[in-house]
Length: 215
Ligand code: HEM
Image 1 (tube, rainbow, N blue to C red):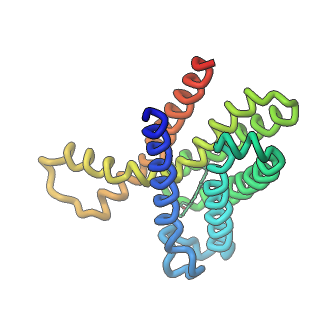
Image 2 (image 1 turned 135 degrees about the horizontal axis):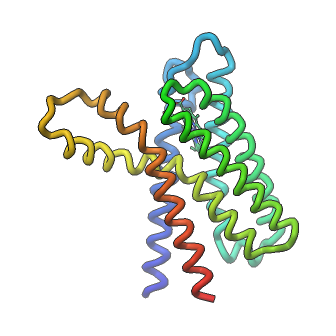
């Protein structure tokens, strides 16, 4: 019974994160710059193409990343785990380098620093995960890849916490005149990535400690 409850919880988390990612990517599937939610810089013609590369490479990392955490797939098809793992890290590399460039054109300094922090953490944890697998230190590999995937999932968590951030903002500004939803969203989008990052890091470290204590 307990096992089924845990499985249901995991399915719900996978469903929510993939749903949030699909929602975020939807305006970009037709490759129409007019639908971009990111304000495009006219003096940098590669802005939109690089944003698209970033979005689709990162989406692939997010989708295939879940496969790596299925225990029976790792146990029964270790060669598949290795192949998918290399693709995953390739997507992370492409997603982070393009994210770095695109992030330099973000007007908000707070968001820019959030993206830069994500890039550094994504590359660092990915490198540690890869290096520990090459050295056959598989326990350390699992720990670093859990941290790395927690960073990947910030893209989903940041969107999932947005409604809650809006509610908290409204609750804290009841006495002030209503600014309009766009202005409120602008405030919230300054912090949602940071909130998503903190939440994911805490959950990842909790899972890692839980796994160690179970042994
Ligand atoms: C974890 C490392 C990541 C970094 C550093 C990063 C960085 C960025 C940056 C800098 C932008 C442009 C934002 C702007 O100019 O306002 C962006 C946009 C975007 N990214 Fe990422 N990203 C990451 C992960 C992901 C993942 C895993 C996905 C998977 C779906 C993703 C999907 C998107 C989408 C859909 C946009 C367009 C946002 C919008 O329409 O508002 N990103 N990202």
